[in-house]
Image 1 (spheres, rainbow, N blue to C red):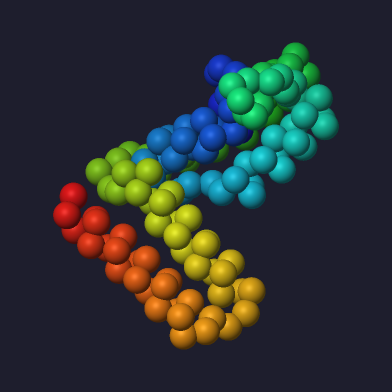
Image 2: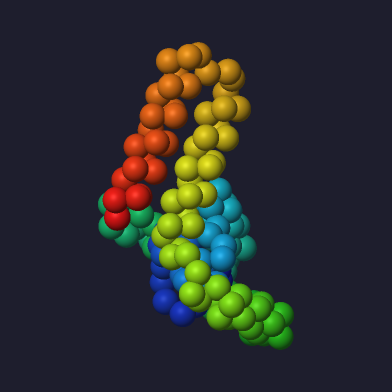
Length: 140
């Protein structure tokens, strides 16, 4: 993430998209992974945060962040090489946006089900929403 911010200042969502693209859609980090890490990078002094569009926060690398990347260059280069290889292997696969959307649906279902049992009406509503989404995808 710090490397991506070092390439250009970025919003959290842009980091998610950049990672998805780099690995050809094979992985899509969740906001629950990205935003706490951005907070940690800020706490470490590796990035600064400024107000962006609306409620968005723009993250910019600091000199300390660049020094950290330079000090860990071999590890970073190995990680980037692995990500690039994954991207090459999955380049013809699913679009990152579709993978992310599928993961969002899966997470929404898990979170809803973890709050307790659904009654018959709720079960039917969830099934209808999923069926409607499937029908819409088939029409594309």
